[in-house]
Amino acid sequence: MASLPSPPFVLVDGVHNYRDIGGHGLPPSSTSSVRRSLVFRSADPNRASAAGVATLRALGLAVIYDLRSAPELAKAAPVAIDGVARVWAPVFEEQDYSPERIAVRFRQYASRGPDGFVLAYADILASAGPSYRAVLLHLAQPSPAPCLIHCTAGKDRTGVLVALLLSLAGVPDDAVADEYALTDVGLAEVKPVFVERLLENPALEGDEEGVRNMVGAKRGNMLATLRMLRHRYGGAEGYVREVCGLSAEEVERLKGNLVVDAVPVL
Image 1 (cartoon, rainbow, N blue to C red):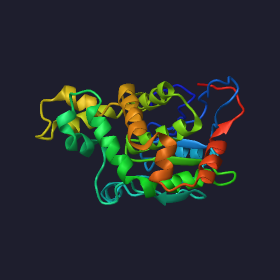
Image 2 (cartoon, helix red, strand yellow):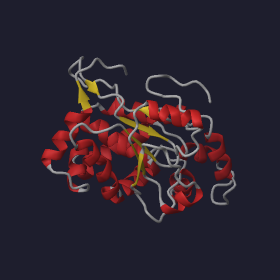
Image 3 (cartoon, helix red, strand yellow):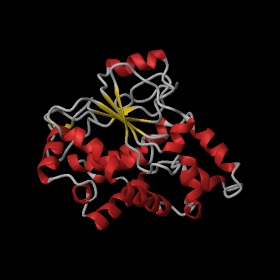
Image 4 (cartoon, helix red, strand yellow):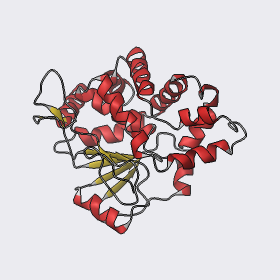
C-alpha cells in the first residue's frame, strides 16, 4: 500500500482509507482539539492481513461499527478479531448502498457538481437515525473505548457521520470538508476499480467524467451538504436530537468526550 500522510492516516495492511478523525483545531482556542485515538474511519476492514489485525489491536480498538447493508455483507462478510466487538448498524438494511450503486441511483446528477451528493447524503441522513444513534451513544458514555466506523468505501455513509461528529465538536465547515476530501487520497489505489466497474454499467457507459465525479470526495460536496444540514435540521446538534433521539445531556457528554485540551495537529 502507498504511503499516506500521517496524521491522520494510519497504515493498516489490507485496509484502505484508515484514518483518525481527531487532531483538528477548535477555534477560537489554539490549545483545544478533537480527541485523537478515539474515532477511526475506514473502508471495509475485512481484508486486513494478520499484520493489519495486529495494528488494529495496537491502536486499542474495542468496537467496530459496520454501516453496510445486508446485500453488502453477503458479498464480504465480517471477519472476527479477538477482543474487538462488532456492531452491525446498517444505514440501509436491505438496500445496496455501495459507491457503485449510489452512482447509478443518482446518475442524473453525475456531471452537475454537488447536487447529486446533497441528494444522496440527504437520503442517508433521513434513514440513518438508528444506525448513527448506536455510534453516538457509544461515544456519549463515560470514557468511551476507541471505535472504528466503516461502510464499503468509507466515503459516504461513514463520511456523513464523521462530518456530524466533527461539527458537533466545533470544527469549522472548511476543515470538515478538508477531512472529507482526504478520502480521495485514502482510496487512490482502488478508485480505478470503482471507475472501471461503473463504466461497464449501460446507464453510465461512456460518461467517464460523471463517473469520476460520483466516486470522488470533493470538498464542495461536503460544504453543500453542511449547508443542507443547517437548512433542514438546524445543524448537527439539531439532527442528532431530532433524528437520532439523543437528549440534551447525552449531546453535552458526547461533545465533552470529543474535545480535549491539546494542541491541534491538523
